[in-house]
Length: 391
Ligand SMILES: [Zn+2]
Image (cartoon, rainbow, N blue to C red; front, side, top):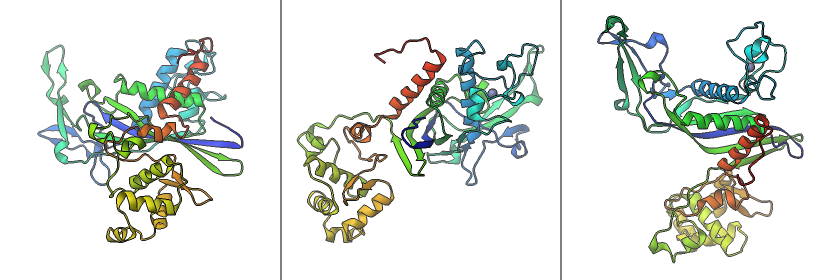
């Protein structure tokens, strides 16, 4: 994808949040099952700190399944450029490629195995284990009991009694999907599959017949890293569109309204410097260390003395160096500063932050990027369909 100029290798990192819409059960290894009140109990899988996590392979399997399901639904014939093999098929009389697993054919893998890998080719997609981003307390753990019913005798079967440990709806996990050298349509397929999972038909983990495993995925940040033939990395960052919040009445005359962001508190230096840069920008001046220092003192009272009191670096350049190292700021060779492309200020009640994140930098948002990729997929799957010019 996006092989512009001398860019020859591209990789993508897609980070986001997985929200539990229903309870979730992902069982740990059978050896650690144990039993309670005579019924076998399957515990939720835990990390080394005892916190529940979602194995990356669980999400990966669900996304792969959706990709296969989608492609089978779209391409009824076996001649299209986007197709999927049958992972559990066997070479039969028909000889149709879509009925045989890729591992058994000596040709290029199908569209899904090409991305997720098969016995004959390595994967180009990895998903890290998903860590809980909310605080965890053991009191959140719940036990669900199940009992098999004999249909003929119409009674419960005692020996079938099971207990599963589940974690409740509302918890959030962070995820990261890494893809090596994806085509636009492959990312389109990935975005489509992730949307489908949020629809609730595809569920994660065990106890799905108990109504568990419904999750929703939202994307927080997409990074595309291109490495050119001269091995110079170039990163493009896409962020979701942030809903602009309405400014409060009393703040309407404030300079904050003019800048489109609310004045932050001085305990968030990134946001403070971001605010100063916007202010300098609005006055048509170029932001260098001296100009930023002046703005810090005038608008936040952060004079040299005050900075010392707060334990901040005495020199403005010290503060700025830290922010450059954290990738919040970018420094040009002229010693001027700008807001780093990936930086989103965490300013409560801000307005119009979206313009900073995307519009002013001339970038697409994740939604726009995903829509372009999905269009690339649609163009390949349904080549005869004319593109809607209003889309
Ligand atoms: Zn395949």
